[in-house]
Length: 305
Length: 270
Image (cartoon, rainbow over all chains, first blue to last red; front, side, top):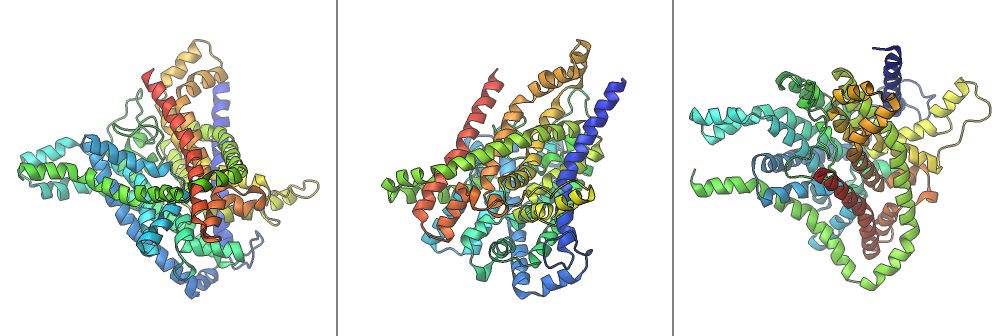
C-alpha cells in the first residue's frame, strides 16, 4: 500500500468520524440537558440528575401521555409485525398478481406525504365516527408496516427451504413446521421489526396532532403543543427519555440481528459481497423502484463480509 | 389439508395484507379526493393561493437533498469499506434520526444553535472574534436540521450500492492509470448513479414531510405547504382547502418518484 493510499484511508476515516459526530452530538446534548434540572435550554445546565425524571413521572398529564403512547406503541408493534410478516411471506414465498399488489401497497406509504394521509384519517373519523386513538394506531401501523415488511423479508429470505422440506418429509404437521422450524429463526427479525415499529409510533407526531385532542394527548403531540405555546422544561426530559428508550429498544435488537447474521451467513465471496441494505438496487422479485431504507441495513449478508 | 385449504392458505396472506392496506391507506387517501369533488371550482383558486408555499417547499426540499448528498456519499463509501464493528455503529447512528421523534431533532438543534448553545460555547472557547453567528430562526437552521434527518437515510440507500462495487473494478482502474479522483467519479459514482438518483429523490420526499422543522427552527419566513395543511385542519377547520393543498403536496412528492422509477427502469433495461 502506497503512502498516498494510507493518507486517503485516513482522510476517509476522518470524514466518516466527522459525519458520525454530526449525528451523535445533538442527541448526546439532548440527553445531557434533558436529564439535568435546568429550567431552560442551556449547555450550562448541571449534570444529569434523577429529579427531572421524577418530576416528569410525577406530573399526571405527562405520565398519562407517556402511558398512552407506550400502550399504543405496543399495539402498533404487534400489528405492524403481523402485517409485515404476512406481506413478506406473500412476497418471498408466493407469486401471482395479488402478491405484487400487496408488496406495492406496502411501499406506498413511503411516497405519500404524512399530512395527506393524516387528512384522510381525519375525513375517515368524520364520516365513520371511529375513535381518534384507534385511527392513530391504524395510521401508525400503516406507516410502520413497510419497515417490518423489509426486515421480515430479509428474515424469510435467510430461511433455508430445505429445512422446511426436511421437516415435512420427516412427518411434521404444518403447525409443527411453523412453530418449530419457521418461527424460531424469524424471532430476531420480528423483534427488530417490533422495535422499529414501536420507535416509529413513539416518534410520529403528525397523525396525533391532526386527530387527537388535548384530553387524550400522546407524548409527541403533548410535547409539540408544549413547545408551540410555552416552554415546559419537561419537554426536554421527555425528549431525553425518548432517545434513551429508542436506543435501549432498537439498539440491542439490531445488534442481535447483526450477530445472528455473522453466525448463520455462509462465507462471503469477495467478488460478491451481497446486499447491505434493501434498497433500490435490490428491490426483490416483486418490488421495484425506490423503497424506504430501513433497519435492514444490518443484514446477515452485509455483516458477513 | 384439502386442496381448497391449500389454495386458501396460499392466497390468504397476500389477500389479508391487501385488505388491510386498502382499508387503512387507500380508503383515507380516496376520501381526500372525494372531498375535492364537493367543490371542484375552488381547487384552482386554492392552488393559485398556495403556489408560493409550494415553491418554497420544493426549493427547500431540493436544497436539503442536494446538500445532504455529498456527506451521504462519504458516509456510505466509508462504511462500505469499514470493519464490521465500525459499520454496525455507523448504521445504528444513521438509523437514529429516522427512528427518533422529530421533537428530539428540533430540540437537539435548538440546543446546538441557541444563544448559549454548542455553537456559542465553541465560539467563545476558540476565542473567535465578534459574536457567534445567529443561525437559529433563520432558514439555515431548518436546512441544517433537515440535512441531519435525511443525510443518514440517503447514506443507507447508497450503502448497498457501494457495497456491491467489486474491489477488482477499482484495482483495474488504477492499473489502467486512472487517478484516484477519476476512479472515484467514473468508476464508483458511475456504478452507484441509479442509487444516487434514488437517494436524492427519497431525501426530497422525506423533506416534504418535515414541515414541523421550519415551523420551530425558522418561523413564519419559511411557511411550507405541509404547515398550511395542518393549519387548515386544526385551526380553521377548512377540510376542503386542506384537501386541495394535500393533493398538491402529493403530486409534488409523486412526480419525482415516478421520474426515478423511469430512470431505474431505463438503467435495468440497458
